[in-house]
Structures are given as structure tokens and as C-alpha cells.
Image 1: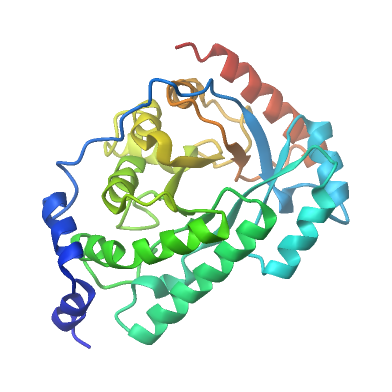
Image 2 (image 1 turned 120 degrees about the vertical axis):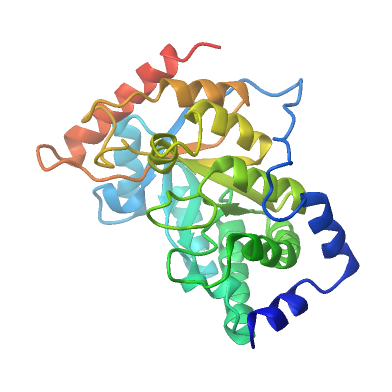
Length: 311
């Protein structure tokens, strides 16, 4: 199937055409960030980590460790429903909750020009949403494509997402979870580099099952590259769509406090929107330390930075 035929099929339907007109294609430059609600709750700092960085032979041991380190959640990778149900049981009574599932892009299958691959990719994400719902996870992290996973242009990919996301959002609602779009730095993808871009997509889809996440590493890269003004502005642009945050330094993508990097500006943004979900470590542990020593130090540093973030 050539690109013209693909996009013609993808954009079928008056509803999608109306959505594209509202977007002012190409791009989403005219869309505004979601409005902040006047009754937003007071923001909370819920620290967690991807489970692979936490020592322990099983989920219960990892839960004990994360509490000892000063956190309260664990982030898992892709799961099936049976495994998700077991993890939920293992976490019961521990005081540790499940964060988002770090799934990925399925090789760019969901935006593939091969409709069979696309169909399978959509089903694979639906399966992850079912697992997230069974676990009680706030969402499944989804990257539409990395470099070399699509030949479509950004404005064409925008159109594809407008076609596939409503169905995925409806499935997410039924499952009790969300799709979380993840913006990446331009070294990893040519598409969706900013939280504000992801937020404009969420606003246009207008489905509570379609939301987003932010990552201090990728956001910091965006600021350095001149794509964004600040972490604070990006988080504010994410607004009520933001349901997960990854934490790392920008230079070496390592544990907070092991490099000169401030999270205060970003935390101000999270406080402004009344953020309620997890801030999870997605970073390396320096060779100079161990998880047992480094993660408690990183969590203590982040709590201090949170206190310094005044609004």
C-alpha cells in the first residue's frame, strides 16, 4: 500500500476529518494547553522505581526495599493479565502501589503502513491495557515510533493517531487504565518530542483513556535543544493529562544527586497542576555506588527539591 492510499484509508470518516480541521494541520501549533481546574488537589510526591533496579528475589522483597529506600511504588514492564493479577496480590498490604507499565512502541507497529502489522500492534497494546487494569496501574506507556520505525512525516503520523487512539482510549476506559503517550528527545525520535505536543494530541482525541507522561531526561534534552522553554512549562502544558513521570539527570541519565541537576523547576510545574501520580526512577546507577546506597540518597535529594519548589 502506498502512502497516499494508506492515508486516505486512515483518514476515512467525517469525524476524523473534522478533528484534523480543528487541529489546523500540519502540526498542532494553534492548539492551547489544557486549562487547569480551579479545584485541583494539592500535589503529592510519590517516589518509585522501575522494579529491575530494586534488589529482591520477588515482588514482596522489592516492595520492602522500596519502602526502606523512601519510595512507595514500583514500575513494571510489559505484562500479561495473569502475571499482573499475581503482582497485585503480592503488593497487597505492603503499602507499595503499582505505577505505569513501561511498554514501548511494538516496533512502530501501531503506525505501520502494513495494516496487518498495525492491527496486531493495536491488539498488543489492548492486551497491555487489560493487564494494567488488572494490576491497578494508572497507564501503559506508549511511544508511537522511534527513529527508523516509520517513513511517515510527523503531520501524517498525527493523522494516524487521530484514527487509532479513540478506539484504544475506549478500550483503556473499559480496562480501567490509560494509554500514556511518551515524548522522547529528538535523538531517539523525530516525532512527539514535547509534552506539549502530546497534550495537544490528547486534547484533540478528547478521551479520558488517552493521556501522557513526562520524562525529566527527555524534557531536559528538549530544553537544551531549544524545543521547549522549561520543564515547568512543559508539565503545566501536560496538565490533567499527565499521569506518570520518569526521573533522571540529563547529562548522564543517572540517579538524581549524582550529577549537578536541579528538579525544582519541574517540580514547580507538577505542583501547579496538582500532580497525583508517581515519579519513577528510569536511570542508571553510578558505578561508584549501589542501589542500597544510591537510591535512598536520590530519594532524599528529590524530597528536598520538592520542598524547595515553591508556588
